[in-house]
Amino acid sequence: MDIEEIVDHVTGLGGVLVLRPQRGDGTPEIAWGDLFFFDAPDGRVPHGQPFATVVTKPYPDEPPDPLLARAGSIRLNVDVGRAAAAELVPEPTATAGSPAPGPDAWFRHPVYGALGWVAVVDPGARGGPCPAGAPGGPRAGALTSSRRRRTSG
Image (cartoon, rainbow, N blue to C red; front, top):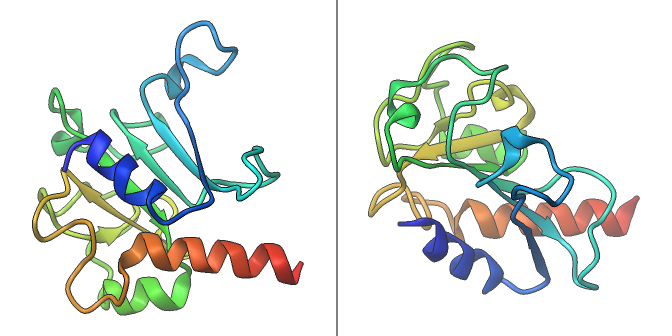
């Protein structure tokens, strides 16, 4: 999947706002070229974190990842919650500080995995739009979880 296929799939869930930071919009340079998906049925950026991101390069607080460092590579990151992350990736695929296990393979996010984030570098047939056995896929689960948190809090 490329970035636009991911955008089409996620926005097809409805009520999703996509932020695309770029030069000149006041966002930090590190975020330029990346995507941030928010649960925003009203079209306004909500308070809090996105439920998914697509990054185009490693971030400074993350371990080096040779897969993501390749030109044209992307990593889809999704907050599915701790329980769903344990179901999608039963065994932690990497310890904190380890790179992705390979392209198109879901793994715990290298920094936020313990908080329920999963990730896939260069998602394809296996890694996206939904991993095997995940009803509705992680993005649908993340959106549902995000909406549940917003209405209960």
